[in-house]
Image (cartoon, rainbow, N blue to C red):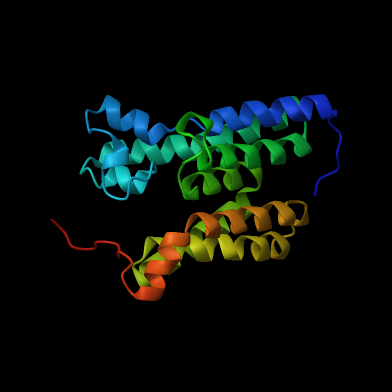
Length: 203
């Protein structure tokens, strides 16, 4: 963990603001703006980019991915600029919690993969890039997005340690636990052999 240099009051404020920003359900907002319907009634009902993609609108899905990653990245960068590294880590974690458990949606949010990568890239880009490489390799090898996400989050603590970023070790462990928790249904489908694979067919 980083050295605590920010006052408890400012840390609490950073945590609250980051949570509220992270809780913004950009998938639902973008789906409505594009006239794609209620995202909760589409596909898996999830609020992330993967489910937006099931509407057939790739641009809307890309925007959702960008905003879901960007809200956590912004929380980290703003907190770091105005308060310090301790606030940056806390803000990133709270933005992630906000996405997964948003107050605006009665705490029923997304799985946090894009938000996970966004905060890692902003907080410690070598670990973020390393986790991204793991995701790409696993996704290419197994053609299952959830497996790639699970492996990337599992490897993040090892990457943090191996790349000389021990200050984020505890954070990456906590994030990994939450990513696995949010993928509980995916894990069940993986065990049953019914998990959806990445479609590689060209239209």
